[in-house]
Length: 54
Image (tube, rainbow, N blue to C red; front, side, top):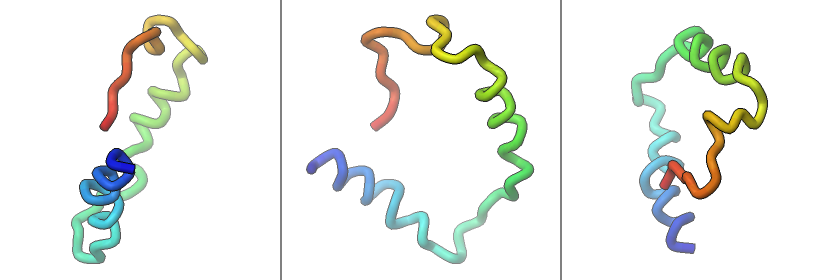
């Protein structure tokens, strides 16, 4: 529960601010293409015991 509450406080609720400056979808295209161009389940990217996030 604590992790969910922290996530909502940090990210979820603030995402509903209509005045928040957002980037257009085109801004994210190079990043999305880079991720999807990788080999699936590449050991250089996905590693046992490594967790990045909250």
